[in-house]
Image (cartoon, rainbow, N blue to C red; front, side, top):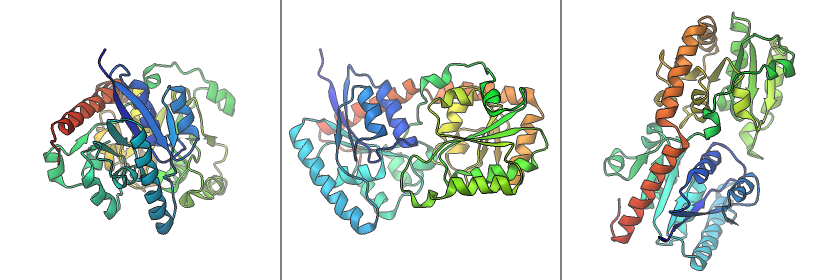
Length: 382
């Protein structure tokens, strides 16, 4: 039997946001006959627990720091810990899943092939410079790849691989009405949902402001919590949203569902999904999940969303930061149910063509093989 390649994954957040969920989906789909995964994260938590359930060995090295001075010193310590770990084990390739993880890998000066996964649109100057030390950069969208020099992509140094979606979202679930019953909503009334962490840039405020402008009778579901503890930008935001609904006198039609483990089941009850991010989204994981379920989607016209939604075909785009435009788009789809269903079908077809977990895992595996081959021949993709 051929020897498996030992891949060490670095991901600094112990909680599970989009980057961590994408990593877990990759680990679930990885060909274990060819690759043997290991994980390093900052401390035990949601990510480590989920990886352990997938029989992935987990090591902890603190990589999550706030403040410039603490961050620099902390990352230097983390890189030394990582270097010692790598001396003890014969890993063949490092896959950095986040920004801090990439810093740690580069600073450890291991000499091992490094793949750095790019999942954000806002990389600091030092981040873009440090990324030059990676053998390969994997971007989760063309928008993310465009943050880096074009000649890097032309030379194969940056490869776009869209996120894969958990197969559970591709299982068509017939709406049962359980959310209508649980929330005391009359059966048959449309449910407009937003899935994402409670953060100002995710656009929950715009949906709340759009709600009273929607002419069609509908209820609005805000699904998500605050997984990243201590994020200064998110402090007090849930309370602010609750005050907004009360001030607009729509608290009877806006429902906060919090963090859900059964997101696929909840989304299957929706009439449509909205993705009203106020700033460009690197990818738009919730849109791909909605597509897999056959839901029509309305999204902000910027960032990676433009690569997922074909305006007027599998969904609608609207100018970000415009509650009036969002309300108009919601009315447009709620008022034309057959058009909405057609968009949902086309969205599902796109998800099957572009966003399956199997496709994602196979493309990542191909990147591993190519990077290992280049390293074995002394070549570089730089």
